Image 1 (cartoon, rainbow, N blue to C red):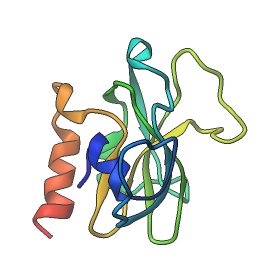
Image 2 (cartoon, one colour):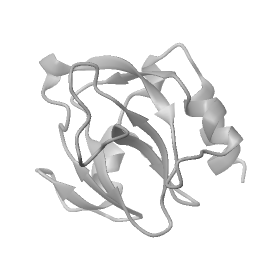
Image 3 (tube, rainbow, N blue to C red):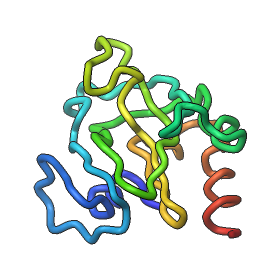
Length: 139
């Protein structure tokens, strides 16, 4: 799995990434600080999603209305082959855009790697951790 710092090394392409080279491992393109600086951090519920727009039950249970904390957070701009979108968020102070009509992609996974653009460890909700353990650690 990859958290925020890990995500900016796991993706295949980063916009505005100023630290080091990517190591790859996940076919996604990201944008650092997509939602702004530290002072623009926010909390918002995410929506469960996948590339087909209908998440499986495990994804829905883990991500639907998860109370996500975004601190200088990146967003995933696009996903490549073998990557599923797990969750999206609509920023509470911004309109939907043509690039992200259903909200910005904030969680994705391949068969072996999962990343989030928010801090699930800061919520009192453990559903995403449970999903990660059940689908990536115990598999």
